[in-house]
Length: 175
Image 1 (tube, one colour):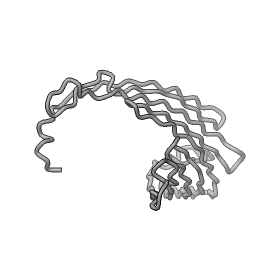
Image 2 (cartoon, one colour; image 1 turned 180 degrees about the horizontal axis):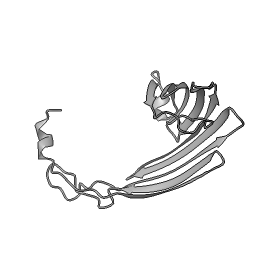
Image 3 (cartoon, one colour; image 1 turned 180 degrees about the vertical axis):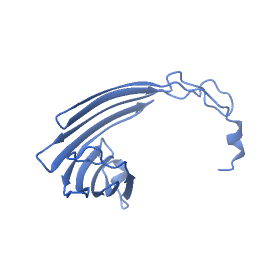
Image 4 (cartoon, helix red, strand yellow; image 1 turned 120 degrees about the horizontal axis):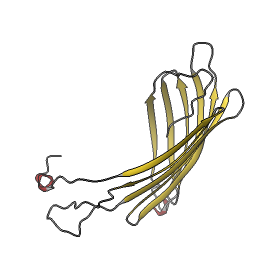
């Protein structure tokens, strides 16, 4: 950004660790994992203040993808994050309806996520071959949403993926 004060910030080493378990079988995919970031709590200060340490961040997540018949799949996800006094839980599900024909990969997507004490965000989208296009809208539910101006936002997502390797597997959206 061209601000000279950022030049005085010394480089630092940060340590992170994590684990993930993934289970796949009969169209089902389940994973669960956790990670810890900035485990060594490195000093991050412009003025070498020893009290200015980067707080450790903890994250835990889980997801489940499950086929619901020949053309539909549900994908559910949960994520918990905590750093210092800030924390939240986000969870939701999406449904994918496969419209694919012989050599065409096409699916319709719809879902809803919720971030505790903050917002709900529904989305819709389409998956065409290696491209996913989706639109979501944040519905503010926090204390910021009381008043004359309600904060909200639209998000347009474009996701490019490798071509499908396993015919008959319906891709659910990535959020």
